[in-house]
Image 1 (spheres, helix red, strand yellow):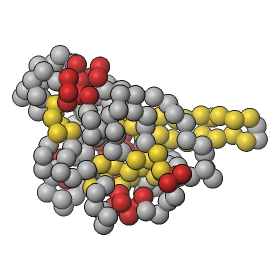
Image 2 (cartoon, rainbow, N blue to C red; image 1 turned 30 degrees about the vertical axis):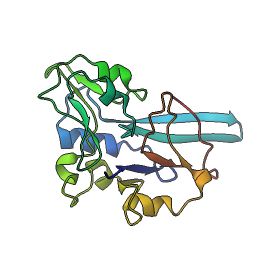
Image 3 (cartoon, rainbow, N blue to C red; image 1 turned 30 degrees about the horizontal axis):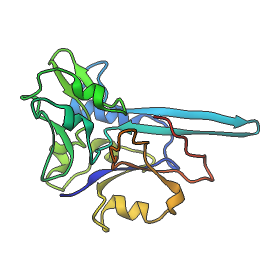
Length: 196
């Protein structure tokens, strides 16, 4: 099974929110529903040694996804073809267990539809392998990459290969989630902070 995910190069992320806007347009998301958010980490330090960076956070595509484990109907599931965590809205009963189970707070509940929603890595665009997610396509800084972590020729693997292991990070895994999303942050720009 592939390990399709995002790699976000924080050395390049300007915090412009294009990923948020392109996602909302692509999925026609109503007010209050977000699949992606950009947090500001910092400023930290003391003058004149101040650090700050932008941290886009979306579904981390966890290998041991709590949201899938707690879903009573199978609405939250891992797609066997793409390896991504998805939601089958026709099976969702609106219990919101998955929202509470996600340690990253990246799921939303759509009151109008009565279902949970989250980043799908634009499965409608990416499932056949011909396109990239809207956030990747529209990132003006070229900070976002999409692909299979197990494929050494994928965009994500090639970007990660450019950096030393000390520059590659992932969000904390409080319950052994094994998130697939990777973040690149070089010490020359800022020090990685454990936020979750």
